[in-house]
Length: 254
Image (cartoon, rainbow, N blue to C red):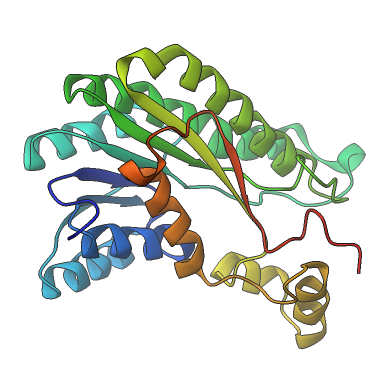
């Protein structure tokens, strides 16, 4: 039996990487998917692949920093598919990297607005639609950076992603009585286009792999399976969690 049969899900950051893999997995598990991201061409290709496999999906491109876009995604989910049950607020950016004292205010704001404000705006409009359905699951993408490790050069990224954990806990407390579960995943190194851009040489990749206890990076599909767990009744008593999916990078010292 499909784990998300009859459910409707929004996935942001679905153009590539973890969001792309999760949108495909949700559809394979029976969900009707609203795929969100900045790149319409990539979203359209994703929707075509899902539909070719017998699934249901629609795409809407936009900027998660725009509150109107958050509203439009929920309206699309409810108008096209009848409601909203799951939201994976995954869109994000590494932003400008470098020493904190050299980070511009504009760079700071851009990263926080995308990663943290974008997540807040998504949940702000998703949760009321889920309440109308009698419950739902909101999932955010955070990171171990700024949670179990401070990595030089990532001040804005770490602060924005740590903020998501605080947001997760507050929303879980506020809406638990209405059967809304809210959780965050904290991935380790994952073989996505963003990671490939950062680790452009075999030596860089080997170094990052070695930081993990498992001595490798995750595939986007591996992270997507954890998101699926949080989206389904398999995690029915899990809320307010910051769930490490990090290949042991948080505990590894070898």
